[in-house]
Length: 410
Ligand code: ADP
Ligand code: ASP
Ligand code: MG
Image (cartoon, helix red, strand yellow):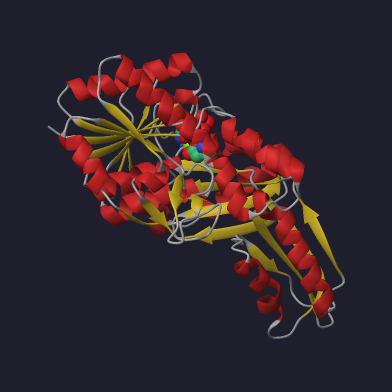
């Protein structure tokens, strides 16, 4: 008998029939002799609707109230799934984050899980109950509701699996695994049987939203084996696990994109010590993560600084940057929301050169201008005009030998 944590995303619980389908899968796992903890997201589109309501009312909604609002979507699905399981004759009980409790820090809208008390869940599991947990939410130490950032139910599931020392954490979604790139963009994308935590971390942080990045951080830290699968079929999925030797032989294992960032440029910044700190400190204080940063060569003591921020934080970031730009006497601020970051990822890159230059060549052959570049040991990212995203992904996927028909990587 094993302890299985299963997470079902928004599409998988998108309507009543799909909730029934999830209930049947959960029941089967239980009937096979396992203890089952299910983590669910809100029905697809619901969280977006809640965010839109908040934005319609005010430009800068209170962060505390934002979390009170957006965490409600999951309350609906835990109740519906529990009812459905009960109507099928199973013992099932729903839990909101604070009823477990799942403790987080107080960073509203992107809180980090700090600890999970497993006492209540264990008692219920011991008397044969199927536990249904609301993903995406927790409670801070002052009793405020918090949420874990978009896509956060993945993290709830892996964290619950870690706390309960579950045998496996199955992430059920609307594709049957992690692919070499988004299978909705490249029909020839190949399913990856097994991927290392580090590669998955890079892919997730570079936009492969099939897993939220923090869920992979948790899985790596606590050695949770994650199995990404489809809730619509029984195909074997992708195992996210420790790196093994054959993983190194693949140079580029995936191509990712992120259209959820925006670019801000501060022009004519005085090139002297302390200026960058002045610009970025207000962003850090507001918990805005700055991603890529480039500073131009200085000309007459002035330089330009360009960086990217999550699009959800764009308005807040722009306001803060405009204030600081005035204070430091910069010439002006420009911004662009129509950008995309395309990246190639692979642990094999560590030991090979020429990968970045090949990427630049492939993009240039399509007339795609590269606005920013950043690299790490196992990835290369380029910021381009958003309108070329799909083209860039397709040509890179093909150039690095990832298409299904020639699945031999270069
Ligand atoms: P859920 O609602 O189940 O959490 P998400 O929409 O968050 O599902 O994530 C699944 C989606 O991730 C897929 O529909 C797919 O379009 C997208 N995706 C992006 N990159 C990848 C990739 N490399 N492999 C698989 N899916 C990907
Ligand atoms: N419902 C939340 C969201 O849409 C969390 C999740 O789906 O994982 O971001
Ligand atoms: Mg998701």
